[in-house]
Image 1: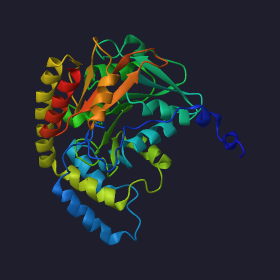
Image 2: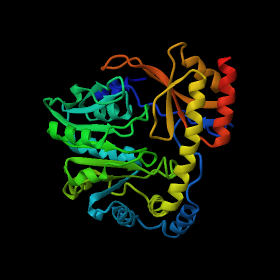
Image 3: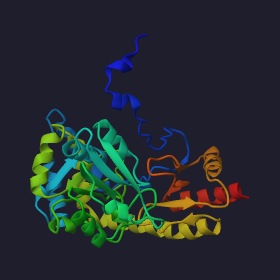
Image 4: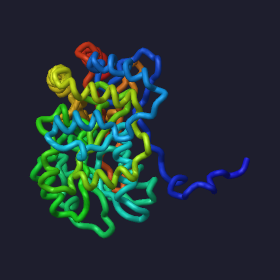
Length: 357
């Protein structure tokens, strides 16, 4: 067979692929490894999706206007502040394509969402990974201007730590750097505040959101960006023509409209997290303060990978994350454990107690 890789761009051949969390298919497991919502979405979503199937022979609205109107009302902005995408990963891709060219730089904290570096590599761009401080706050190096720096991704709350950067620090970062700042708020509905209001203070600040976590719609694939309308206008040039379909638009619009469901759902998850964290600490884990629907658990007395493997062997999936290899230097490893239902977490804790002896 011929060596087909010679036809590909060198950046694609050399890059390591992004590895999502394990999806076990039909296997009966307790799945706490990909930060999905353990509860189904608002029942109104199913009704909206069924209704949307009546017009599948037609193309969808390319701008998802119905969703933008609801989002604009929720955040006190105009619909022109909102861009929709096929999950927030699509939004992150659009942003990288629009702002970062070949050999230019994208900055991200470390450890954080590993897709960021992949998006830079696909562009033929370079990524600057800058280590968090010991408390998962931004180090002084993160504020230093750099040649060819074109974009910053700042997950807030962060994954895997679940920690947050305060708004004054975000504004300070924006004033220190001569490039846009993307605040990735995938988990912000579980946190005490959000950064959309910062856009009015500095138009270079942009905020991404997803419906995969707090709205229970990981299988639907819908995300969005809130940013200055001038930026949104340019990004529309970059997105695919129809990057959201009629079913996802209908489901997402209805989900965002049902804020009472969201509040009830978030309340349940936070209550479960509140029970889960002290028990993990009693079992010997160091757990950072989380503002998300997951926790980051580490140990200094024993390796955690065997714990992950033992849980998996008994049908409980958590996410083992190894941050020992990076351009920013070794950070260590740990277990990122999603907050499931009370029953799922109780079962996980019971098995974990047996694993630890």
